[in-house]
Length: 273
Ligand code: GTP
Ligand code: MG
Image 1 (cartoon, rainbow, N blue to C red):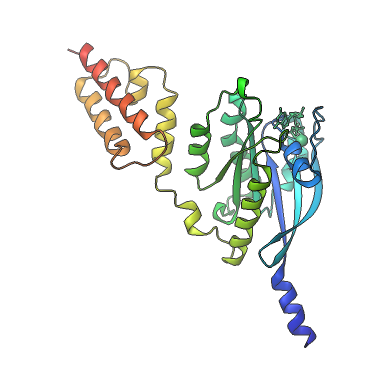
Image 2 (image 1 turned 30 degrees about the vertical axis):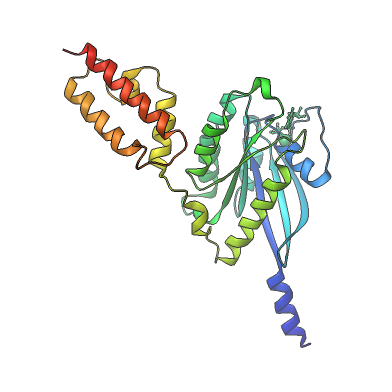
């Protein structure tokens, strides 16, 4: 065969990608990678110092993918070291510990740090994200439910997997979906395939459901100030009802959120003259 033709075929088949891991310290980023690459689990905590780098080869369909993995340290102390490694990433593994709510709440600030370091020109549609709800083996200490985590991830067009680096649950499925999506993206001219980001509900709906779940009282739930008038309560209610009505909203948790909003309005109107 003509050597140029052969070279072109080989180029199409082999691909080189860069992925990073993000999330608070001690959530299990390094253990997830170790479980996948070395098929083992280390119970003792060895904090990543700045960054760990590794290479692995995976097969996706007819392509061989060479994956460069940059495993970031989650501790704020290492910001100055890890900040250089964000650029040119095609995939991000975002990890939280299902037993630590603050590690879930921190996902937004991890995305924030990433955007800041990659610069305003970064196109988030050219990056594949997978969210790992990790340590699901520790069922008794779990505080972040699957619905909450899945909603956060899927409303942003991110994959969501329940994982345990300890038992291995979800790890190979997660990486398989992750690498396969990155390959699809590369074959799609560097854009995340559309089907993957279309989940049937909007980010506004997902964020509103989350806000309702976390609201401290009925005023807060409707998004009005304590002491608001009947008109203000009704106006806020109508807006939320349109957004969350179960006939129109398929986001997980929308039915409960809608019911909660109806109850909040009823109880507020009872006490307003
Ligand atoms: P930094 O490098 O400091 O950012 O932390 P990390 O996110 O890389 O955490 P690491 O993987 O080092 O794990 C932290 C601790 O959690 C270790 O003691 C692990 O053994 C433990 N761990 C990680 N994953 C799991 C899991 O799925 N289940 C359980 N039970 N423990 C886990
Ligand atoms: Mg680590």
